[in-house]
Image (cartoon, rainbow, N blue to C red):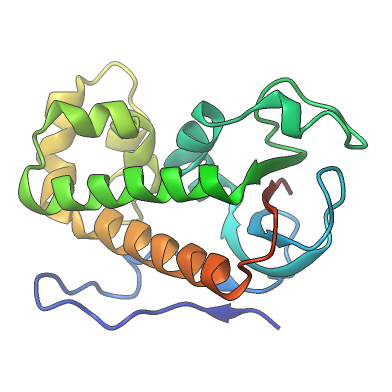
Length: 193
């Protein structure tokens, strides 16, 4: 049974439940969820010891770009579906050392969103035009309007930057916990729906 992960609220921001982007521990029984976790198999085998579940759209908008950037085909050739690039519908293997680099970059993103939300470095870490699509309480017209300049979208997005801060903070916390509790594991897997 999956459980929703809720870390204690920060004094800096308070979210109402409908703003929060869900992350579930364990197997969330829905075919539209991506799984992120530690596999106790070798590269090519997915046998999750522990994992979290994130809606595939939220995953696509908020995490897929960074995981695609760190994808290395050499860890993904001995699978039932060998891949040369990140595969949304397949299994993507990452050495834990690479996942730690991804977490460092996401921690930098959280710090920038908190202290310098107009930094150009944010755009190097995530695509804000995609990230805004994960927002629950911003008009879909704004989120999905590819003709609207990003600067205009940010007028609506930045006051609700806590949505991203909250999501990435919980993701970092739980992935780091998985790694710390499974130090002998070799691979972290992102598994498509």
